[in-house]
Amino acid sequence: MHLTRFLLKAIAPGNIWRGKHRVYRPIKFHHKVEVFRTLAREEENSFYLTRPYLTQEQEFRSGYELGAKQKRYERTIGKSKLNMLPNKTTPVV
Image 1 (cartoon, rainbow, N blue to C red):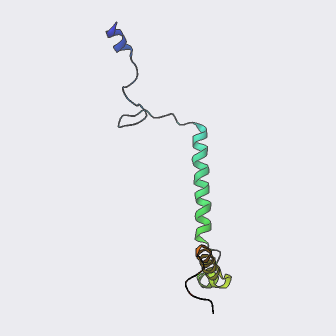
Image 2 (cartoon, rainbow, N blue to C red):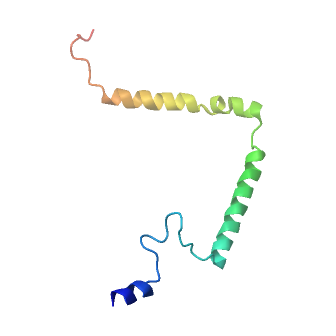
């Protein structure tokens, strides 16, 4: 009985999907389609990354023109002033 059970055991011991002698899942058609879709998306991304929207000269001053740095500064200072208690030790003149 033990010999028969041992001889009829068809799977490898342990986790068969990991390790040096793993069993690979069969590649199906939808896997191939997904790979080609991913490659097409990467190709489109590289196309847009190689052709920038702004030139380097335009990009250099774009943040200053929009006032983004000033707005961010005011936002952080405003948050810190909200957390401060009024100064009660000095008399108001």
